[in-house]
Length: 75
Image (tube, rainbow, N blue to C red; front, side, top):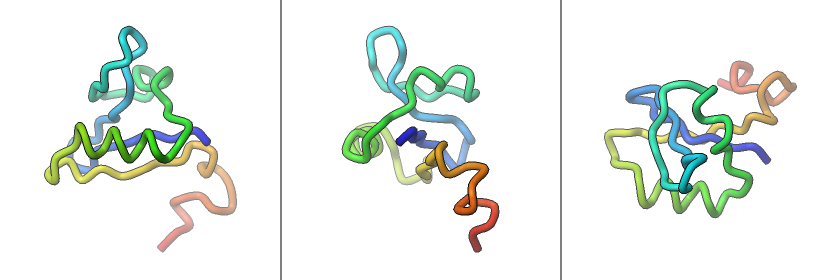
C-alpha cells in the first residue's frame, strides 16, 4: 500500500518528513513522495495526532489511481 493523507480544505498532504520523520503539511506530491505511508495504522495515528476537523483529511491510495477502482469512477 502507498497511502497519502490530503486536506480537502487546503489541498496539502500530511506526511512524515524525510529528515527527522516529524509530520509536516506539504503542498506538492514531489515534496510528499518520500513520506508515503504503507500501513493504515500509521495513517490513523498521523490523522489523530496532526489533523483538525477543519483539515477534512482524506486518504488517497496511490495504488488505486488509474485502475478500475479509481476515485474518478466512484460516485
